[in-house]
Length: 172
Image (tube, rainbow, N blue to C red; front, side):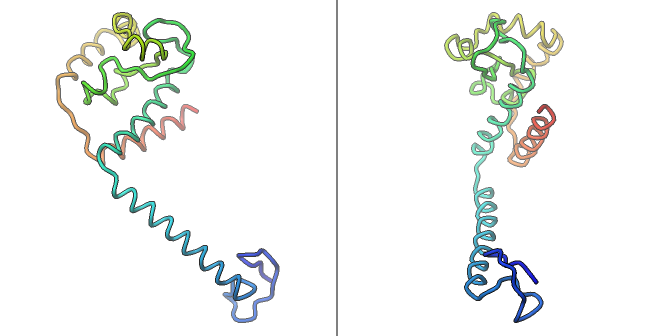
């Protein structure tokens, strides 16, 4: 006795030992399901291959920001030192003006919505607290990196996505 792959009814195979479905109607339905499954997999691969550099950057930014919020969970805002009601991943050097530091972990820390959005980063306080958090040596290194142009390739972005997803998994 076997279980039909479509309707889950027990049946005795009549046609062959590899018969998967109880009736031709179920077999047709099962075949459609397999084709749908194959098409979905193929479609996913096609969509992935059509992604642009900016698509990969956007995806990585979401993953990276999630990592920063998890990494700094329980910390206060880097700028105002108050507990965060709404947590943001605040960049010391802005991602738009300094794309080379967009994914630098020393450049991005937990920041409250108010400081990040309404005070444009509250950079005077951010500077002092950042130096206290990462140290003067790493802060100076961050300043040096600011002037070195860097553009990630698509394979690098994909690798970074995988790495940060793994880091998020380890933090949870």
